[in-house]
Image 1 (cartoon, rainbow, N blue to C red):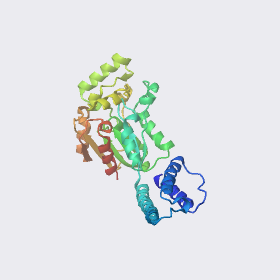
Image 2 (image 1 turned 90 degrees about the vertical axis):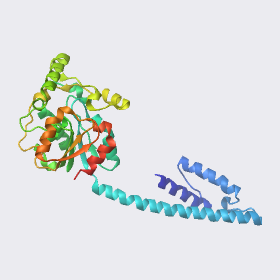
Image 3 (image 1 turned 135 degrees about the horizontal axis):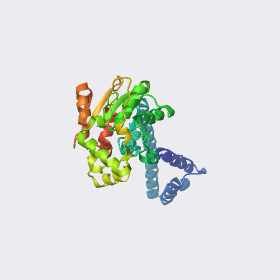
Length: 331
C-alpha cells in the first residue's frame, strides 16, 4: 500500500516536473503534492522557474540535486522492498498449512480467536468450528447429542469446506472428536495435536476415565440445574485462568455442556490416532487434574509430549506461545 502510494506520488512529481497535468491522485497524495508545490515555489523551482541571483541559483541547484537523489533513493528502496517481500510471500505460500482447531467442554470456536488470528497472520488457513449445543450453537442443545454427533460436526466441516492435509488440533474434550475424525478421514489429515486433551479408546466414555468424585459432582450439577440435560460451566479459574481480562472474556462465553456426551462411548474402528503423526501438548501450570488418566495413557503409548507452562486453557492464557508450538511441531 505504502509503496503504491509512493510510486503514485513519484509519477506525479515526474509529470509535474515536466509541466504535465497530473490527473487524479488519492487525497492523501494530493495533500503531499500541495505541500511540495509550496516548498518548490519558495525555492524558486516551481515549473522550472528560477530566482535569478547567484546565491538563489546555487541554492535551487542544490535543492534540485537533493530532490533528484531523494527520488532515486526512493525508487531503489521501493524496488528493494518489493523484491524482499516477494520471497517471504512465496515461502509462506509454500509452507502454509491448514489448521482445524476443536474446542473443549463448555467452550466454542470463540476460544481459539487469538491463536487463529496469529496463525492466519503467518499465512495459514485456520478453521475453528463449534460443536452442537455449545457457543453460538447453544440453542441446539438436547439429550440426543452424543460423541458420534461431535465427530460428525467436525467431519462435515472438513468435507464441505474441502479441507485436506489438515493439522487437526483438539483441546480437552475436543480430543474425543479429533480421535473420531482421524478414524473416519485419515486421508484428509496431516497430523493430530492433542492439547491437554481427553484420550479415549474404543467403547470408553469420558466419565469412565474421570475420577469418581468428579463424575458424581458433575452428575449432581446436571440434575439440579437442568434435569440431566447439561452440566453447568465451572468458573474460569477451573481452567487455570486468573487474569482479569481473560476471566471476563471466558466467563461471558462459557455455556452448559450436553451431559449425554460425557456418558456416551467413543466408537473407533482403529487404534487411537489411526497411525497418524501425533503429539500431545501438556499444560503444566497448573496441571488439570481430571486428565490424569489421559496423561498416563499417552506416556504408556510412547507419544511425543511437549509441555507448555500454562493453565488448561492455553489458547486463552498463552496464545502466542501455543501458536508457536502448534506451528513448530506441525510436520
